[in-house]
Length: 81
Image (cartoon, rainbow, N blue to C red):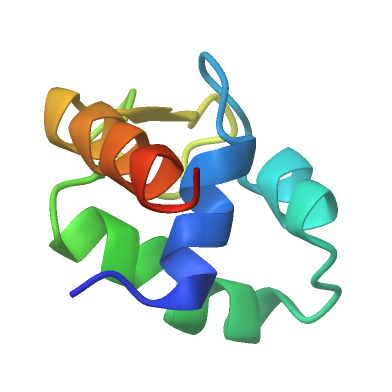
């Protein structure tokens, strides 16, 4: 089940984005809250992925939708129409 937070994250994720940019787009200032409520659940469900998976703290790290994430986002959009 996708939480409102994860759905919100999926809705702002276009292309490859840095964590700080995603955090700004969803309007969350607290880093740890964003990580626990938005980022980790989306990663755990396989809805987003890291561009540098072997180095999660890399300064070059970006996040992007997976195919599963894109399908989930489509389903969310269809549900709200």
